[in-house]
Length: 355
Image (cartoon, rainbow, N blue to C red; front, side, top):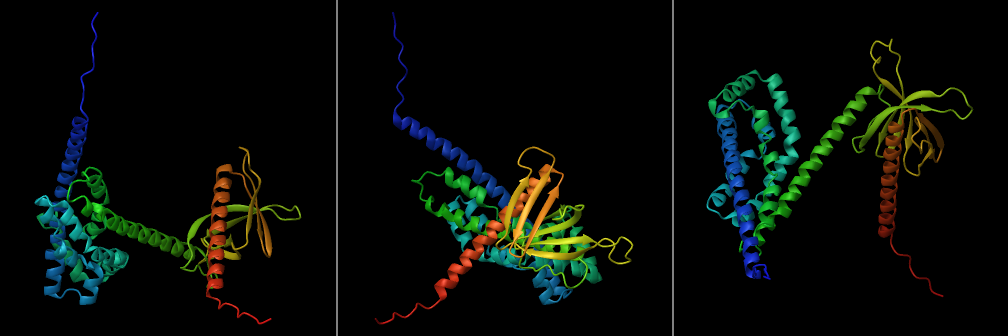
């Protein structure tokens, strides 16, 4: 009878294997980061050399217009020493220095939508610039890339966080560069800023679209509110008459009821007329029918000075309206509580009275 024992694996060996795995993953991530950074720098140089510098020399665009379109892209290119450090293997040092220039990316991010607008205006009105842009883009160095695409480079490139997260996750804590890779926090902050700006821009476009749908100057969609959704719902009258379909626009602070204008109207045939605006503050939302998988249901909305009973024959649509309304009302209530608490904090304390 023989006994077989498993070979003894010392703890030091498993630790070394883990370190080797970290190093392989780190090397792979670092190689990809260097390659993408090389392409990024080459494309940035195309914009600064063939557009920014030549336009400045030719005077095709006024200085303020040129700065509106290109923003801080030249400064970003000039300050970008990250590639030199990456090619020499100093990832931590390179990323640490890169973070000192993140304010340039913040400036660029905040200006990008104005830049797109300014570029569109010049392409529409400035024939010389339109011809110049076409000639530059035809250069073989551009590889069929348009200026509009190249101007988005810093926005896309700030997504360093994935590389940083991989590098930090696969760098040994004993590595002298480990602490410097904490730059991921600063880069993630800029990424969040980009996402916030994108959401604000999308909301602005939605508000402009809704404003164009509404006729008359009295119904104004304020830029300070957030668009949530819109759709048709039937209003169930209290006295049992026929339910009437109405268009509703839900915003972060109010629910707007509107009716379609007459299709025979020469100017407003495709528009809506605002009828009632219901503030969501102190609103109560209840699902009267529609808790089961039936066909549609009813929503009860109670406002301080009004009450609505809304009906939908589409169960999914009803559920979505219920969730959207409930979330908007809850958010509005939370903001009201915070505002009231701030007001109380700002009030001077009452003077103590003598007995």
